[in-house]
Image (cartoon, rainbow, N blue to C red; front, side, top):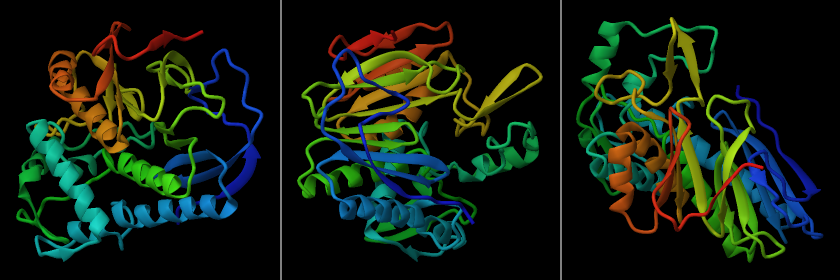
Length: 333
């Protein structure tokens, strides 16, 4: 059974990747919720919130994990994957999120594909000591069943036309959940909050003192919390994906968790990280993975074709490339 914990504390806003900048911390205090969902640490900090509000945020995380997790047998996703191609009735939220995944499959021409599960299930990136590669024949067979176009949705009924296909929403679910949490906090009159789902950062307004949130961009392959740069944002999502997050090294080659849907092997290109700044976190979640798989040139083209989306690309030579001058990126102090 996955261990979960929940704690309410009165604390000043802080985060491993949130930089305080030059301003003093606000005098007001915020309630903080900490938890473990989707095998990642979740933290929500909100000014003016009650314990009941924060408790409901916890319940929302539990609810969505129970719908979207591919490792919980009773979840909507697991029931779809176990149905062998038969129709499965799911929640409105699950149908909505799967539709969003299909949308990004189309936008990326299949470079982002939520039916990646047949391949991803053959890899173990959680135990760095294992360092085992999948059997090439098994992986080749798995790739044959990766195709988002085999997903059919009619209302809240989901059908996989390929009985061997399976869905993995790990590349988009955290962003969706963060957006729902933000919606809930707004409905309760909260004007200042920071939602952190395992590094997927979503801000509600600015900081209590009126300043922008400064969200740190992790330095690839450095100790967690080592910031390479920071972006200043109001009411935005900041999501990063990279080859340093979950990986192992074998025979001098780094194998990471962002898989190429065409091969089933980790994407190999000129990038170490992509950070997306967007209004909605679900977009940032999907686009950070999509742009990483596309590489710098094609990823930048995609960002330039979209409205109200900005990106920071970090190439393997350690250089940062921004999509425009609109986004404020500061070197780490």
